[in-house]
Length: 164
Image 1 (cartoon, rainbow, N blue to C red):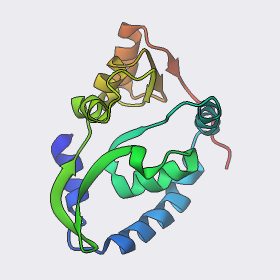
Image 2: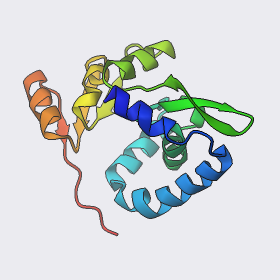
Image 3: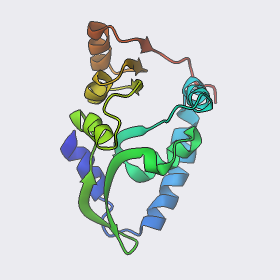
């Protein structure tokens, strides 16, 4: 997981960051936005209304996650995602972070969030981060995460169908 997620962000080497940001924005609007669970959007809205500080942690590239999180009210400075160094507007292959598996919890701790109040995860690669939370939630989880969540007694939430 760590190697492939790192490679998936390094593949953009030598591209202009502004071009990739525009491509990611288009990708989000056409491929991701229609698949957002309304319950999760509403939950993020309610948490922000109550003063919660929201973070996003993903092994997906930072450009996509930063673009997506704007729609959930999470600013780029609270997005921890796979990223490489950008020099003079050009993307390099120098990895800066690839938060996956235990690395998700490590990335959060590095930013002062060692024991979050709540964590929402959907795959086994979120397990270490979920284990640090006072209230871990498996959301639309993979089979492996369902097994772990069941064993740990973590709530499992299966959102309803998405209506496009």
